[in-house]
Length: 297
Image (cartoon, rainbow, N blue to C red):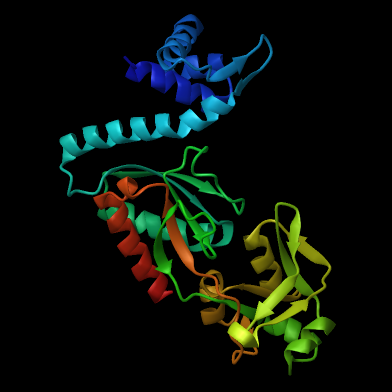
């Protein structure tokens, strides 16, 4: 028989990478935490953690079992919250991963509005442009740009028609010749975004058979999309970013859209979760709220 406390110790230990740290978080002794792990491994018949005097890591079986343990604890927590506050009332903890630029400049503000409307909801946010692994990280929802690569994830569209746009600050355009054609980009300083040490320097435009790709150059790149946007606003070059990220800057005239007749690369925004069971009334309310805000941006 599996015990809830043993599952909790296992998940906390995997998250912290330390048995003693998990014990401190749970306010129990390291000996009790160790006993809980041994009891769980005995019940399952598999070793979940490889432990030495100096290190602790998940075994292959432990890594596979971790997402099931998380799901079990999440469902139990959700059931308790449903009993306490009624299933139709948004509430509970949502752990959300989001991209840096949209997260800092829009989503955080929108989530504040949502929480003011539904005060029983609480958030734990991870703001980063690195792609979160929903199966191994303590994240319930991920808000991401781009087409869905992992078909096992469930996507709730927030801005399906969003695209990238070319932008520059008025100050930059005063110092450099305006773009007449797309090839003119090759003569400009392009501000580039970087993911996992790979620079996004091949910019695509158009769609279908009309797709055109340019290999752009520039003297700045960053793995934080908000930094790239700030460089563009400061007049340091041309950026190619999601229109959603730039909505306030374009509206205020801090950035101007270049070659607006061209179709930029598709950048649909989705809210992702692991299973349809995760689509609770609270998640649906949040999806509808954020979709409305994206349409207004």
